[in-house]
Length: 242
Length: 242
DNA sequence: GTTGACAGCTTATCTAAACAAGTTTATTAT
DNA sequence: ATAATAAACTTGTTTAGATAAGCTGTCAAC
Image 1 (tube, each protein chain N blue to C red):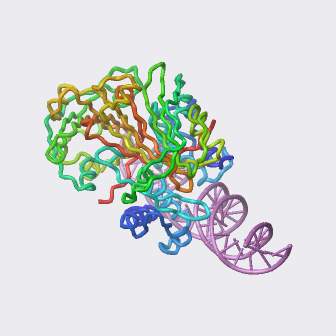
Image 2 (cartoon, rainbow over the protein chains, first blue to last red; image 1 turned 120 degrees about the horizontal axis):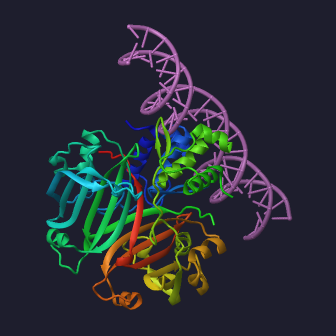
Image 3 (cartoon, helix red, strand yellow; image 1 turned 30 degrees about the vertical axis):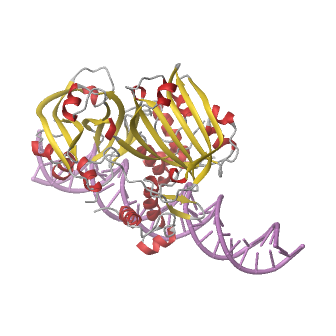
């Protein structure tokens, strides 16, 4: 069960998505939210802060919480959202082909904590998958999952959804990820699996995912056909010190 | 002048960067922060929430605020940070060549508010610049600034820093931006200005920047040589409803 | 008509306090 | 020695209240 501010957040978000609160209009004032939901002002403010963080509203002092244009995250890179969740959200038919599954692989430790120096390796389960969107192979996903966290990863978890398996079956609490996007020329593996020629570039998303207790447990390399790649983001400006 | 929680945030961030609080160690507890800074617990918690949002710490219930690896934002795409701020932060020598400056241009209104339909245009100041890093032209920036917000934009502002001009000279409060990254083949203009051949792809970052009162006022198209492009991000997982 | 002061709304910040829940350490009972 | 218990820490959530500051309309004075 979620807490009150999260419940209010979800309710307001849903009402914004369903245009109960339309673009360009103001949400009920903070005092009205207190009355509406039977909560204190600070609880409501936390819900509003979340909406502002995620680009749903802009808070304007003296006026209220203005509903602004919220761009749906585009497929398939965004925050930490699993492929299956996104496919569901965007109503796209997808397939998921596991073409390599190695339960006894190893990876340099530096991939997880780039502290350099130590050249030791860690045991991982290695998975390679091709994501097929509307009949076309668009993405190669290479996942390496620490065996110290997930000792026996069943192949069916890779064929369905890794995140669902981690969270729902193992009860792991996935918390945050660092991510880097670069562009690289296509490799032989890219050309074979994504059916492109060597003039195509590849958008490479490398990420390290961590749990609630800050243990990094998954390293992912996601390789996208450049012509199908799209990334959307919402960012707020931080006050600059100097 | 900033508020108390922002001051505490800045102080803690600085101490993390300077390794007063080292990676893998815990910050002082919330109660200790109250005593250290003479603040209430909620005020300290706001500072900590900011650090957690930006990937400096991971809060672990029952234990404390753990300092985690914080990846410095890579040049040159990230949150809303101006080119000059980033160059300063990363200690890179850069040049900035304005090769087009048109104070009386116009842009389809849809570029700012993609509500479709209306085919009217809005008057803007149009600027095209090439960013030169270490002697090599790497980025083309095309900026379109609404004349209804900034009527007379001086050319020197484009040659120095648009953001510094907006914020420090005009007193505009820049608040948030939506951003989209795609990959596209190089155009003739790309090839000429960035000195690449037609096998090179271009990372295109299109963004709309808005003020504190939610007025969108700037549309930017930033075109990066694919081989020089790098984007880093930190994201927290949101609880998934379904 | 224009201006200025004001009241009544809004959000922003901060405080103090209470209780819940997870972690660690010390103590106690077996 | 071992195991269960309790105490003392930690963060998480919520409440109620105070003060500050921005926006808007009203109303009186000019």
